[in-house]
Image (cartoon, rainbow, N blue to C red; front, side, top):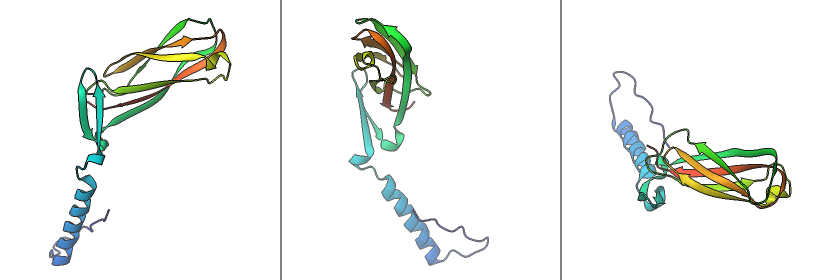
Length: 147
């Protein structure tokens, strides 16, 4: 985007300077125009479709450590949670995937289930589908409209 030079005190505003101002305003307007591809829609069952400019969307990404060098039994579950650094206006959309940070066979046999997503927190469980030692975490991506 073009930068408009600041006029000197007492400088007359001539046609070329006014032209630079108009050009900079038009460039800014083109960058902020409300076209369809600049909107993000977040849809949740409780709040329905909520749309905003993509510049107004808040995205949190985090890794929650669930188990470190732990011995687990097949069929057991472990609860985890993550609190957002800032609240969302509506419940955001969250995605969670397991990450086998220990690289063990038991760590490859897990399921991640989200239990609840609120404007301030996401909770879930990791279900262990094999017995053994593991170190496991949950990668989170949370997208929503900030408060």
